[in-house]
Length: 535
Image (cartoon, rainbow, N blue to C red; front, side, top):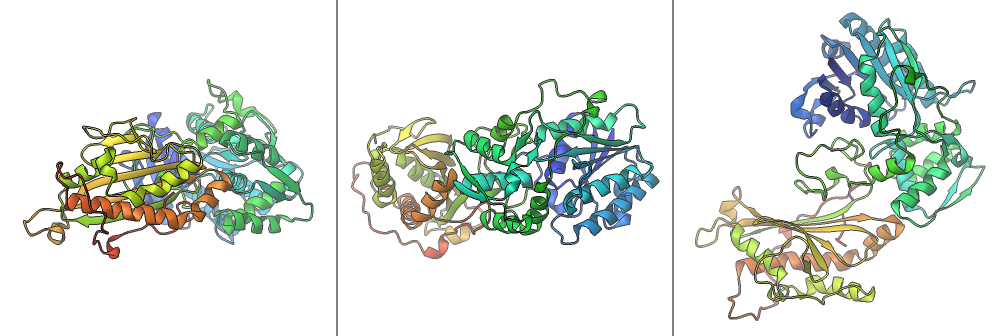
């Protein structure tokens, strides 16, 4: 079946496309800015088209020759989102009718019955009505909070719970909702493409197996994430508007998105019916419960928040990516906070010499040129009773996966290019240190020595994913110490590569290498990947 996904760069759209492909459909991915799909892992498997919902010509071209239209667009980030979404729905409905599309599928929100809806929920309901009245059979799937990395509602839950051990909250923390995992949302979206009978045109509520209050979700998130028990103090005087300001202060979720979402939290949003089961049975594996959905959402760090070519632990290149994982198209504020420090130093040594210097850290000889780079971590480790600088040993060959190198353990080795380490000492979060030797083909002239050596680039990447408030505070408090340590280590490895010490002369000078400070490149701050000095 030929499917066009309008809103393919969005949270749901970017995850729906590969699911449709895996079910054998032909997919056309429509986006207002097609360039944003350049890094999509499925980009080479689809046709990418411009699909600005305010441009009737683009929408008509995007829908031409398609069987099913997935409409996954909303304008929450605009102040006038109600008017924008209304106009866009009319444009898309008319284009779908003229193009002969056989079905429209729209993901909206559950609307409480008999209540005056918030602008956000009222707009979602209005868009669903416009599409249903288009003359094209339309399925409107209505969901509450979607649990998955990148979902705005889930990100607010994540940041509030992780950053605030004690929370002063309004009464909406006791509002009941029926959250649903992103993989279950995608299950229903893909199965309604060939819904029988074809003339079915209506809305269906979808939800997970549990109805929970926001307070219960916060407590259970903390338990799954391994955080201490959270304390919530409800304050009835906090209005939704004031709550949105507070959420905006504590979390990186944009104010324009937080305000309409928070204003909807006064409504109880849970399924009123299970009529969809008449046409689409529940997944054979069963619906995903809240704890499992959170665990899946926390399984991976945000790949786009780390430097290019960083290999995420536990997932192989080319392996299918679960929909609960972060994606490169997700906004900067999603996927949790990841601090990073990136340094690059050109060297006149070739890549082989540089790799041998990196390997030298696996032997007693290799640690000597870098005493200040490693000793701060050793001091910290000793204070907490860890391995510290003890346990070093002479190795006759390079490091191997699983080996212990002082207070580090080798997680991955790609000889002769990359060594990735993880700390053995207990930290309030997850940390990685990657050391790479990269041939400097492009900058060979600048890096050439007197003998015409090609040169190389030393890359050092430190990443820290904080766990709770202690992780954030710890990173900030020890920033200067870590920066000095890893800065000296980077310069020391480059100096060792350029001036290797003969085996019969193990004594190495600790004189400061003469590498210009301008050659260091450190990442800039962003909401989900704030720059800082390494842990």
